[in-house]
Length: 130
Image 1: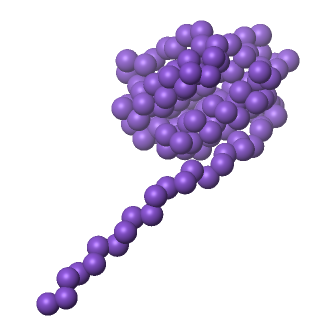
Image 2: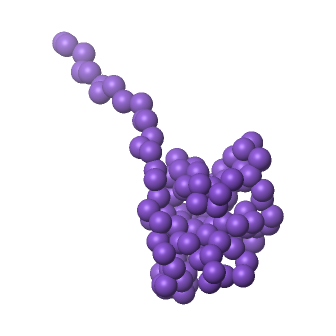
């Protein structure tokens, strides 16, 4: 599967699990370890771990190669290596501090092609007539 297509699929999965501010960067020719780098924000440690768990599980179901993961235990910054795509999952408050996007400022940004998820409508509560 081409790395651009893989990154889009991963972005969709992260969005479905409420990952925010998803950025995809094409670092081919700039990095010796990957072709695409993704950054996503999580609300907290448990959310970051849930995002990583979802990517790991769905990757296995879809036969997407997964090589390694770092930082899962603390959930502050989780790095996932899917061979030609790296995913950085940050707690929102740490993302700006590490500034991965700034480090790859010359990389071409790719807009995530995220389909809106269908959420069930919640029926409003109706007050009984007295």
